[in-house]
Image (cartoon, rainbow, N blue to C red; front, side, top):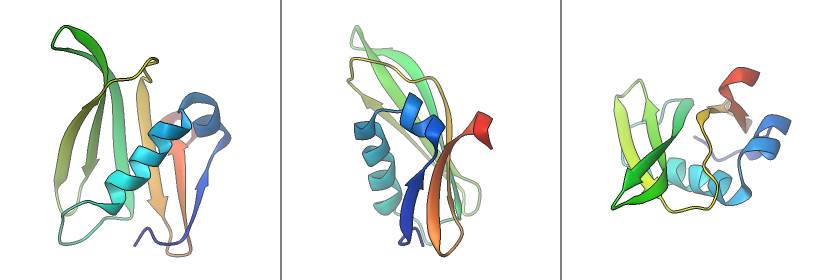
Amino acid sequence: MFDGTKYVTPGIQREVPVFLQNILWYLIETMEVPEKHPLQVFQFESIIEDGKRKQQIVHSQEQPDYRKHYAISTRSIVIGKVYVIDDATHCTMLLADEY
């Protein structure tokens, strides 16, 4: 799963820096779960950690249950939700409000 051709929507291209897009693909690729659900969800938020503002990414799926938090140092913070959908032939990354 998530091995097909990868696409991003115009909203992702506009709102999510390429390095963060690559991190999301990597997080899906390296998930340690018995099975990956075809819908992966990423919530982007701003947090303060060690006195510094960081990008928080919460990666989740419903079945089987999976949830993991990451904090990344970056110059610009993205706020919102990203979906990555695998339909067995290709994978699409899109903003929640595009869905």
